[in-house]
Image (cartoon, rainbow, N blue to C red; front, side):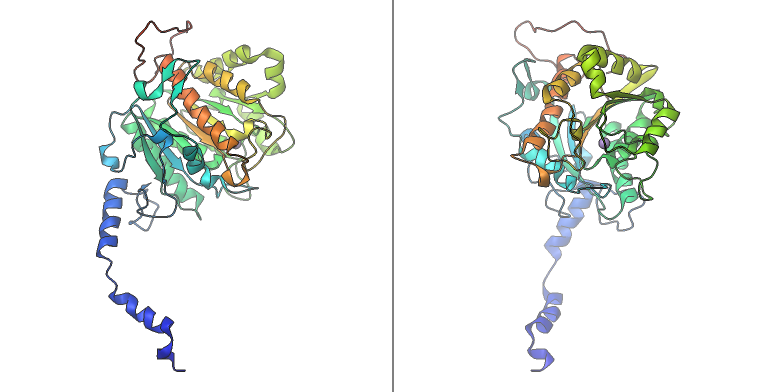
Length: 382
Ligand SMILES: [Mn+2]
C-alpha cells in the first residue's frame, strides 16, 4: 500500500478543488445582516448576531411565538419587542446546558399562543414583535461573549426596541445591564428573581454566573441601592456574595419574607427600592427562583423556591410600572422534564409582556370593547 492509494490522502488534495463561492457569499451576507462583532473579537468574519443557519452551530431554528425572524439586523427599527438568545453557559459553575435555553424556550411556543385569558391581552394584536435569533457567542471566552452581548443589547436599545434576552447562564446579566445603562438618562433599578444573590466578584478567577450583580452595580448609574433580589435562600450560597450584598446595601428578600408579608406588600417594596430615584428598571429572572419540582431544568436547582403562580403574581405586580428590558436565564433543557422549565421560561416572558401592554407601558393596547383594567399608579418612565 502506498500513501497515494489511501482515499484520505486523495480527498485531502481534492478539497482544494471543491468550490466555496456560495458558502463565502452566505458568510458575507451573514456579516452584513448580522452586523460587525464587538472590538475584542479577532476573527472579523464572526457577526454580532448569529444569522440563522448561516454562521455557526448556535443558531435558532424556530422563533419565539412564531414571530418573524429578523434576518437583516440593519432593518431593525421601530418594532416594540425583539427576542434574542444569548446561548452562553461557560459561566456555569455546576451543571452546564443553558446554552440550549434560547431554543428550549422558543421550541415550546407557537403562533397558537400569545393570547391571555385573564389579562384580556393578545400580544400579536398589541405588539410588533421580531426574533433576532442568537447573539454570536464565543463559547470558550466569557469576556468576549460579554462584549458581544453588550454590543448586541446596546444596538437594540439604540433602536428603542424592548429587548427580551433568553439565557444562557446568569453571567449574561452583567452585559445585559452594561448594554442598557448608557441609554438611561439617570439611574437603572434592577428587580432580580433568584434563589442565589449572584453578587460575588469572581468565581474560580472569572466573572461567572455567581457574579453578575457585583459587576452590574459597579456601573455608575446602576447603584446597588436600586437592586432588589427576590426569592433568595437555601444551601447553595456564596458567602462572599452575601457579604457584598451587605456592604453595598442591596436588598435581599427570602421566600419566607413573601410568606410573611404577602405578594402585594413584597411587590410594593420591590418597586419602591428599584424605582427610587431611578429612570428605568431592568428585570432579571433566574428560572431557579422557582422550586425545582416545577423547574428542574436548570444548572443550580435549590429546593424551597417560589410556586409558579406566586412568581406570576409577583411579575404582574412589579412589571406594571414599566420596564426597560428583561432577561430569563438558567433554563437548561438537558435537565428538563417534559419541557416544564422551558414552558415556565416562556410563560414568564409572555406574562411580563402582557402586563406591560395592559398597563400601557409597551405597544398599543387594543380592545374593541371597554377594557377591564385595575387602577394603577403611573410609572416614572415607560
Ligand atoms: Mn442567578
